[in-house]
Length: 295
Image (cartoon, rainbow, N blue to C red; front, side):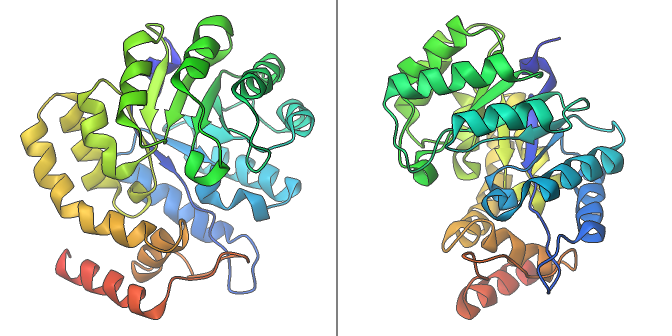
């Protein structure tokens, strides 16, 4: 079975809950993991950028990985996020983090450095060689400042054996369709944009790694399953109800937006580590109104 078979459907880029005094809130994390699994998601991604990884130290990351494994208890696959802008440091992380129970590693492309396409290729080639698990690329130029072009993704897909897929969050539908047209048969292509997941699956993507599914795991997963069955009219009815939620989640900051939803649902504290702060009072009121009208 390939990674494309294992990780089709809805993955959740799970948030990291914090207590009001800024510690990792493991009881809340456990509550959230049970909530999203019980409501039908297909797999969990821990330590993605939605998990506020830039403000977690390495020991916290290792503890979160282990806690996630222990809480999931093999009910769904777990993907671990290990990304950054220092290739050498990431190689060390890939060799020292507890990855035995992970099915794959998701690695966001380097931020701030703005490497060339050749630099991106060499970066991922080194990570793939060091990784004990299949590597999934993550192209998110809105966060990193550099788009990974379709030609680079496809070169990695065809030439580097341990690279198994990509989370594509460029928002460029033409680029997405080029990757889908020319990818190897077993190469996973999953969406990184909740609001674009429906049309991207219609173009051939295998699913989505979602932020919104933290708060709405059942309806979002149902929508993605309908998309994968090519029942797009029914999927659109669900997606239409979620469009406003997507806007509220991403207007000011991710994960501050989705954390506001989860706070109002009684799952976590509305706490983040600087430089991320809670969403504004006016936007938070809109979140409360949305939840009240969709309860």
